[in-house]
Image 1 (tube, one colour):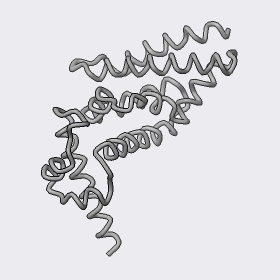
Image 2 (image 1 turned 60 degrees about the vertical axis):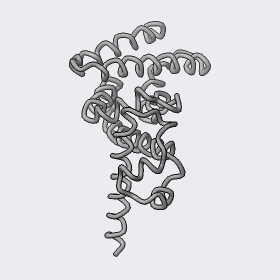
Image 3 (image 1 turned 60 degrees about the horizontal axis):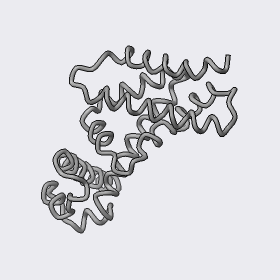
Image 4 (image 1 turned 45 degrees about the horizontal axis):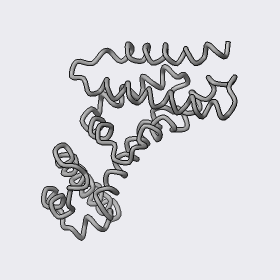
Length: 182
């Protein structure tokens, strides 16, 4: 019985997420109404409110799921280049949701959350050992915003450069910061 209940919850959430993504393509988040979302998903409003308080909560859960999956993949990486390739592969393999979340970054902090995942943050931080903590904080903010903008531009192109090319470019820019430490 428990397994069947979990399957129902999973199916309900999947239907809501699919309907949300379809609506989010053309409708700003603040104009996505629970009633319309539930109609599109074929779900009762009371069922929606059982799991979420608003479409913002649904989007946040989707962002968190994306970050969790990326973090799990990053655990297998031991270099900055490998981590960047992993992020690019994830974005490319999930291009539709990646474009929506990145292009319509409602909270404004998705890039910080993506590049401050522990595995990613540690790799960036360990390369900046010669800087003070305050300098590291500024440089990390600058680097991660730059990475994010580059990846955003990259995923929005229909004809994207190969992943290795974009990662090589990002790493060459990262090296500029390391040149002061040598």
